[in-house]
Image (tube, rainbow, N blue to C red; front, side, top):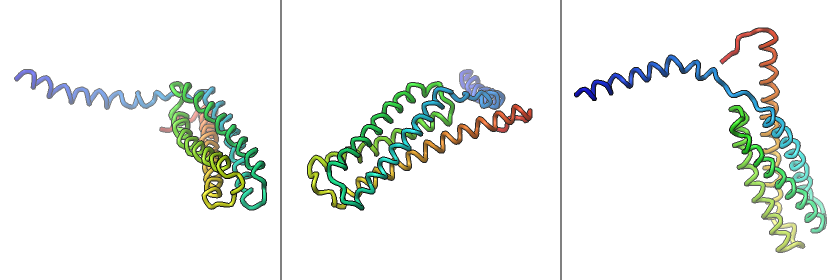
Length: 183
């Protein structure tokens, strides 16, 4: 009977403690990692290069570019995707020291890279299997998907980097104007 008495009082006391200390715990926010910010900025630049190359290759579907031209361009795209995978690994290594928004950015990059890697591989496989057959709907779809995912990745990373810059600017102005930090 006594054990029950202690258990029934332990839960409300623990809950009261959480209510008292929750605002203090929430106030402890991990600051932005300068290293992660730099890596995200680099990834943004690489993603925009990938986007441009993928859009350029997609434009080949409206021309009579040779299969050799396609092969050269997909090689550039493959190198960009591989470089982004390397950057993504660096970001994952630094994730523990990242702020909340930086962690979210890191977590959202991988799905885009996986899709890009898949479509890039599909283009390469198509070129290897039938280099002279570049007018199929399937091949055009691969190129379009590659360009779309590259554009979406570049836009998403750009939004995160812009968010970080705006957040830093607001924090700077809060300090300068001695305003209370908003929650």
